[in-house]
Length: 75
Image (cartoon, rainbow, N blue to C red; front, top):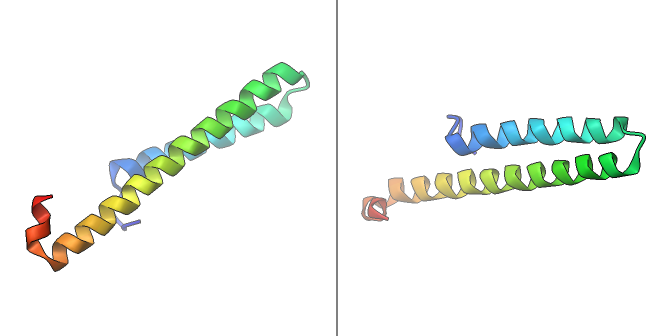
């Protein structure tokens, strides 16, 4: 990812924080159903974070290619 924080990178960090909070909540649960709900939430937040990280990486690749070939900037 680039040094500047894109919206995708900021969202990914927020989603990772939410995933961590859900994981911690799951670990603190003694009841199976709430624990499962927190685990599922953590998995979903992690999935969303990964999607944002992938989006940021693709953006960085396209920006790099556009710098090499200005004609690509019109994509």
